[in-house]
Image (cartoon, rainbow, N blue to C red; front, side, top):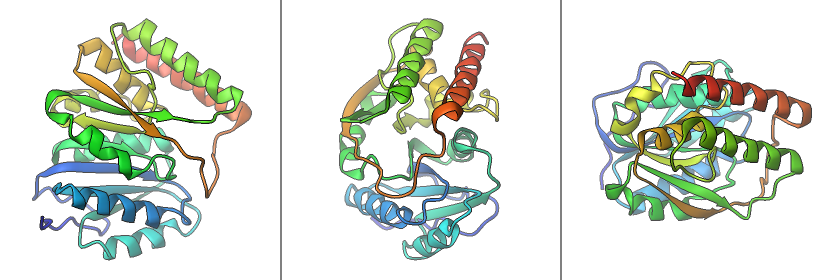
Length: 251
């Protein structure tokens, strides 16, 4: 399927086209893997015949990520758009992406840039979209240190206790397909500085009783780069995320 142009220069969003799918990808210091990730996903989405555009948000990377992204965009016939921004963190960058693209496509897919969850499983989610509002890739075979296991457990407890209802298991998975119309109102209510907006999104699914499904997606170890939040910083960040998530549940 021939793709409509998707502007790859910096500046205002091109809203002249309406897409079946827009992919939101936050990037921070991923110069060694991001081009391979974008090529893999572009091939997979083209093979499925999806009218798509990938919005890549360079969150103030200090390495050569931006130049790598520009090269990748120029090689992919206008289906990749690069947004260069000051560093604000993973969560606020994702939220900016959701807000930017929610009026540009029927579906939004968010993924991370670390290549821990591949494009080979996306078709399983895409085939189920007509009967769902939210489809999530649950990380299968994920190896975590004890600290991250505890964060995941507490995240799940917070969502189930404060948002109620039935919701997804892997509440903060970065492999999520969302029907734009079901979440548009939410994206503009979440505060811009929210550390983990995807927790709130998962809670919203339960609170509103949205139609959802989870599909297991193989999780592989990171091959390049490194996790930016570790040990004590992880617990501080998680505590902040929990407080923000609980506060939002009371709105």
